[in-house]
Image (cartoon, rainbow, N blue to C red):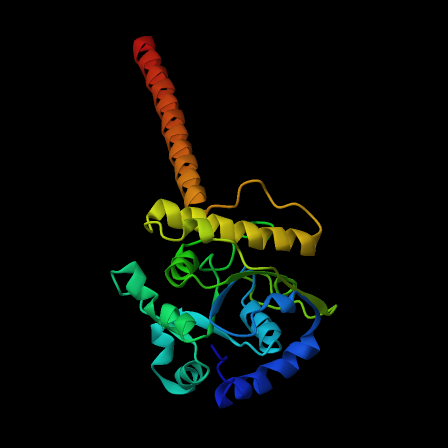
Amino acid sequence: MPRRRIGFWYRFAAALCKPPLVVLIKRDWRGMEHIPADGGFITAVNHNSHVDPFAYAHYQYNTGRVPRFLAKSGLFRKGFVGAAMRGTGQIPVYRESTDALSAFRAAIDAVERGECVAFYPEGTLTRDPDGWPMTAKTGAARVALQTRCPVIPVAQWGANELLPAYAKKPNILPRKTHHVLAGPPVDLSRFYGEEMTPELLKEATEVIMAAITRLLEEIRGEKAPETPYDPRRERIEQRRRTEAQTQSQLQAGGRVRTQEQARQEEEGHSK
């Protein structure tokens, strides 16, 4: 299937975004040979900075296969931003859909048309304290298993040094390097033809995230944690810690009240 033309709007966006990116960050880009020349496919990318969608889009733009990112449907409705989102072929996600597969129908259609759909499987900036990929949502695996398209794992590092996750001000100096490493397609063939249960989608997602993490280990030259950071598990643990602290405070308060009652009783007897 032939690749889609880049088009006016994407070229216009690139003309706006590339000059500041070139000034602000150096580039260490590898693995472009793994980006398919033709046909639909998915790239699955880690997410650690509000800058990295622009920096990563620059990387993939230079391969000639521009990424179509998933974004909230509300961004497509009004003004210049909406026109740019529609014009560059970004993909609206209708989160109000109650059917998980329907919510990603636009992504499935794009892949079947021969597009590249770029997924941030984590769904948001990583909350891992050291910037490693955390547990992910199953959308990328769902689309991949539905279409059986190639899934290219991509790791990136460096945009987060320019603008750390959840930071408000960039660290412009010294000039940072944006590292990108794309790997060969993830082998998901053992999942083909199976019922897409939550357990199967979770397992397929873990395979994708493991591939991304290995690439990031290569970029960073260090090992990732054995167990990915899990925001849901952390929320549960935080709730337990809070409940335990509250219980401890109540027990301490009870001991204080008991001691005060004993003191008052002693004073009453002395009178």
